[in-house]
Image (tube, rainbow, N blue to C red; front, top):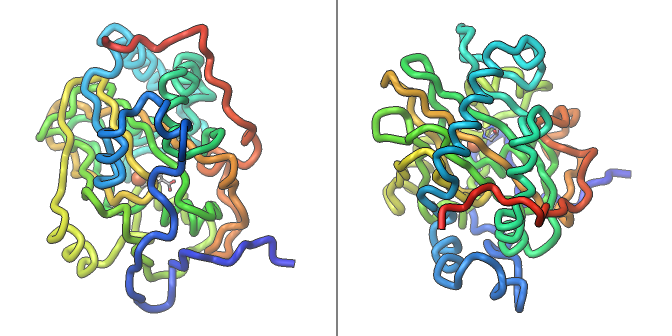
Length: 311
Ligand code: 6CS
Ligand code: FE
């Protein structure tokens, strides 16, 4: 018996079909859970409108510096370099991404349990939550390639079997994000529309898609229409800033032609009520470091520790 609920967001199709309005709320909490969380009513309204929020200097420079030292150590650590979750830049040896980072390092694991962050996530997703995926994108100077425009949810739905839009990414900049080193670019308001993509997903697509994504990239026509309507925002700011973006918000980034790395940390939270099913594209499930299926119990915030929050 097919374990699938019906597929509300068909994608990776034979031929183009019209995009359509999302079928899920943007902010899932109601009542006290909505009003009593760390995000104000204004911030929630902005998140519902734009599909992302930006907080400069969310983490202090000393703490960010320690994270950066961790990154440097990974570049010399053969167990990290040889792990399946470590992705190099196309045709280069530079690290592009390290997935499952919260399982590699206690410091990163503490971050995902920071009480203020977990309270924000529960306010947005309206339930207990767990980590779907974590990663560092290194984007080294001169050689860091970009990421084509995409909706993470489109990939997580097709290739990980994520049923509904009830997931959110927290990204912390570990280096300054400037106009020159390939900052994350987002299309405000794009989270409200689901854009089905064309193209059958080959088995083990992730072995190439994490280096260069060819599938699940909306057509130029759709991108032109969406960006014409909403524009592009590229939050730049100091290391330690926080970008929260909804799972269906279109985003991407340019290659880094500057000498300065653009290293960002990403933690993706999913609602415990939105657990992964069989991939909707019909393939085998991806490895746990991409779509976690085994540690999906409710994440407990550690209220005895705080990742320093700049007042
Ligand atoms: O396939 C994925 O899960 C990854 N790909 C991209 C371009 N963004 C989300 C995620 O890291
Ligand atoms: Fe992405």
